[in-house]
Image (tube, rainbow, N blue to C red; front, side):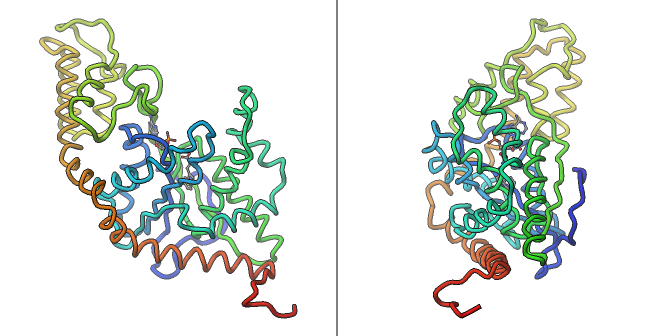
Length: 349
Ligand code: AMP
Ligand code: TRP
């Protein structure tokens, strides 16, 4: 990872001295190897690094922004949480939280929206793309960057690791923090530091497009037969059993490289280059073995969590409580800066 831009204020969580890292994923489909490679694995690694406090947020409200798929967000939330737990996200000192548990995010989002010019949101890539492709965007899609800025600012996040496509959202979050602070005359929100992940997009089973949901993906968990079928269906070129093959253009190899052990990656590379007696069918069998080795070992834990909502709740509760304290503190800071009152705190100003 490389730091793309530096935010204005000193990062870090005052209580622990560790840098607070916030990541978010929408629960909008079955998780696949592309998600693992680009989002899950880096977040789990960060959760094991002693200098970080990682908050992983399942951003279910963001998942609502596609009208045709509104019911998916609730459906996939549970498996998303179970996946992070099963694959070893370290909860000690870190947290896995659910966005819609935090009404403060919506309140802060509204305050941010009220200091943000319409033009900024009209220039947002996702919104412009939707308009250009003749879609009929909802207010939710238009508001998406405000909600995301609020995710980040409500938890005083110092570092937000994202793919390049999310950089604009990060810049908007820093801009909105700046607008609010300028208006309030005090530093209410910390500007986050975007960290652009240097992870290339993983190709899908069609060997053409990036691995996306359902049409060209390989799931992390599920019946072994389904996973084998997906892997056997990977598109390859017409090179025969004994022809030397190019690992750099071979989807089977690229998919293997996204998660397997170094030794396996090295082995397949050598065999493809040599060619003799090693066809794409062999490579696919090796990929099936590697998948089983990496994810099969956690399949049981995954299924266990899926059957144990109470256990999951118990495990996630300490993180939710810490995050709630944090969100309340930041939200009150913003309310106080604007002089907002509640009936309990009502007094003449
Ligand atoms: P999505 O829900 O498709 O937006 O994916 C959630 C996150 O998974 C993204 O922000 C990326 O970090 C990661 N991701 C999804 N697909 C891929 C892919 N094909 N290659 C690498 N990372 C991916
Ligand atoms: N927009 C992000 C994506 O599509 C998801 C997201 C929502 C997020 N809120 C966030 C990512 C806060 C990081 C931090 O991938």
